[in-house]
Length: 182
Image (cartoon, rainbow, N blue to C red; front, side, top):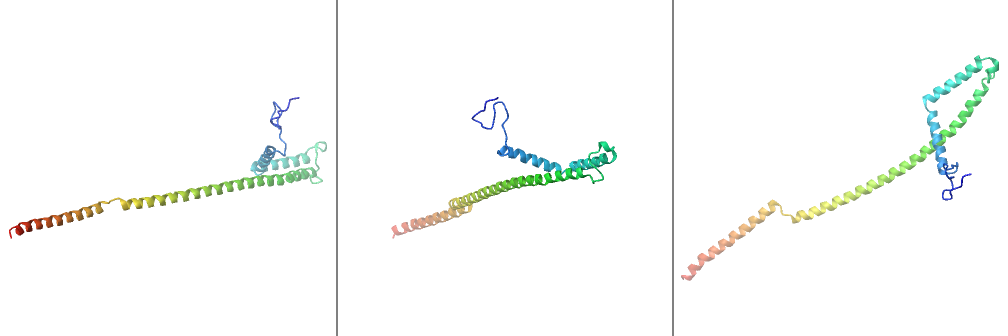
């Protein structure tokens, strides 16, 4: 008998993990199996195969000699009815289990989509605030930045002031010799 690895209680050395139906991995394996069965039952191949099975059953139990028959056509193929009822009684819960698993996946996907939408909204709001801050900074800079028109107007005003000073000085200089002579 192989010794148990105490660090992993669900394994035996040299063997695959022991999966019980109560362990999450065991439930997941069972859930995947139910989904596979539910998907397979919903295909045209399954319907054709089931129809062929029923037709073969009925032909076998109607045409073959009495000793080889295992179901009676006189009794309405009781064994076939039982087999199909058993198949249907297992099919319905398996389909429901598969739908429940799909609902769980959808819930998780919706939650992830909601979280992603919240992150996108937060990112968008952050970027909007950054754009506003940049616009405000540019607005402050535009007040400090001299445009060509402003510079031209300032230079014209300075030139006009210099011209008026020169005119005053010239007037003072021409008036000064006239005063000296009087």
